[in-house]
Length: 233
Length: 233
DNA sequence: CAGTGGTCTAGACCACAGG
DNA sequence: CTGTGGTCTAGACCACTGG
Image 1 (cartoon, rainbow over the protein chains, first blue to last red):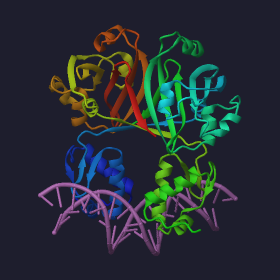
Image 2 (image 1 turned 30 degrees about the horizontal axis):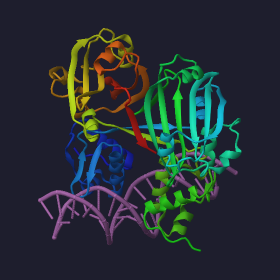
Image 3 (image 1 turned 60 degrees about the vertical axis):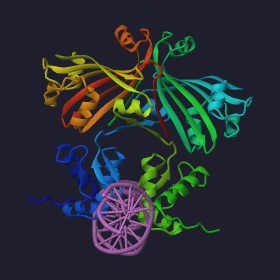
Image 4 (image 1 turned 90 degrees about the horizontal axis):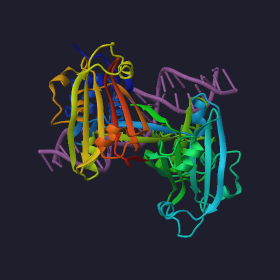
C-alpha cells in the first residue's frame, strides 16, 4: 500500500502525529529525514520542514542537524497561557467589569522591589493599588510599581477612569518580561479588600516587564479565592 | 537614508520589533503589506512572511487577509510554561530527585472525577498517590486516576521504581489535554505528607489528558509551599 | 471584485555536528 | 568530511474577506 500524497503542511503534520500516536514511530526513534519524507509524501521538502518544525516547537520532536529528527522520549508539554488585560478577561467570561482605584502614591519601594527592578536606591516609583471586579464581586487585586523614569506619562495619569493594567499596555511598549505563578495566603488587608477570610489560599501572578535594560513595571495580581487559570495542551 | 537590507527572517523580525517599539508603528496601525516590506528590506516575500507570522503567533501583530497587518492594540502576552516530567524538573534545578509511592489501588472514583473523565458509572480506575522529593524534602504530591480501559498496561506496573508521571509519558501517547492552575489550602492529609501546616496555601496543577475521545488520566499535583512556576515573556 | 496573507514548489546554499 | 536540518529565493496559485 502506498501512502497517499499529502498536499499541505498540516496534513503532513497530522500524518506524522498519527504515526507517533499509533506507535509506528516510538519515543526515542529516529524518523526519516526531510528529503525522504518529502519523497514519500509527494510534496516539497519545505512543506515537510514546516510540519516537523511546528511539531518540534511543540515539544513532540527533537531535531538536530546531522543527527536527524527523533520522537521526543519525554515530550515536554507546553501550556500556553494568554495573559490579557483584566477587563477583557472578565468581559470574555460574560461578566460585567468594574474597577476601583485604592491608592496612588509616589514612594520609595521596599528594597526587594527596588532591587528586582534595578532602581537606584532612594528613587521613587509610582505605586498603584486597585481592585478589579467581575459582576460587582472582587476579582483581582492589583499592586503595581511603575518606573516613572521610563514611563514619565504615568505621573500625569490619575488612573481613576482606566486601570494601570490597561493604560500601560496601551501606552508603554516592553521588550521582554518575567512572570511567575504562585499560591499565597491572604493577608488581613488582602482578605478585607477581596472579601475573603485572612489566610485564604489565593492564586498570585507576579510580572516584571522590561524595556531593554530598564524595568518598566512590576505588578502582583492577587486573585479571589477559587480563581483558576486554564488552558489546553 | 535607506534601510539597509535584512538577510534573514530574524533580522526582519528584529527590525519590525524595533519599529513597533520605537512607536514608528503604533498599536492599531496598519503596517505595509508583505510585498512592500520585502521590497524595502531587500528580501523575498517568504522571508517577511515568516517574520510577521512569528510575531503574529506571539500576539504582537493581528493579521487578516485583505485587511492587512496591524500592530496589536492590546498585545496578549503568551506565557508558555514547560510542563516536564517532575524528575527532570527537579534535576534541572540541580537537586536530588526522590520518589515515594503512597498508595496504589483500583477503585471507583468520586463522581466528579468519573464524570470529568467520562467513565461509565461504577467503572474502576487505578488510583495512584505518590510523593516527589527534591533533596529529600517534599516537592509535590501526585494524586492520579488512570483509565485502565485505555492504559491496560498500567495494571501490570507496580509504580514502585518509576512514578506514574514518568511512566505514562513514556508509554502512553495522548492527543490533547486540559490543564488548570489554582491555589488551594492544604488539607490535614496533604499537610502531613508535604510537611506543612494544614491550611497552608499551595499551588496546584490539575491536568486531564485524552486519547481522542477517551480520557487517559486525570492528575492533581499539589506543590510544597512556596513553589513557583516561572517563565519569560 | 480585488487586495491581502497563506502556502507550495524546486532549487540552492549554508551551518552545524556526528563520526 | 559528510549528512542533516535551517533557511532564502523567485514565482505561482489559492483562500479569505473587505469594500
